[in-house]
Length: 112
Image (tube, rainbow, N blue to C red; front, side):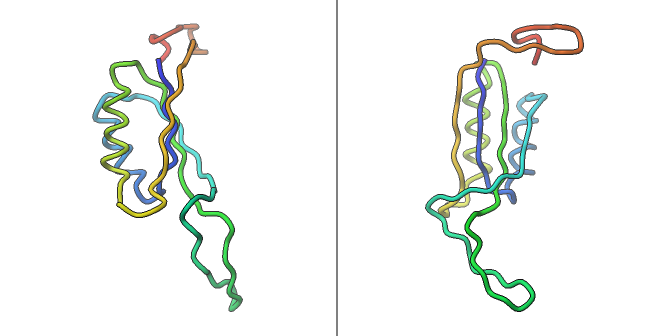
């Protein structure tokens, strides 16, 4: 099993979610996150005062899946998340040693 973490543009979440769901991914977690990288935040105005936010809002996906779906999931994220601009995000892949379903104590791939 592998864990795929992806930091993506929030505006691309629905397309990516639809693509990975079509592959058969039954479970994913997502968070609203903030970060910084090569892209710089644009100046904003709040109550007439201009300010430049230090961090850019993004969405973080976490998907644990079987080995066979790792490459297709990554291809979905790359295809649906790409705008061609700086700030499209990053993907990280980790080994998952074990997984358990709390409800009935299923383990391994059966827990997914």
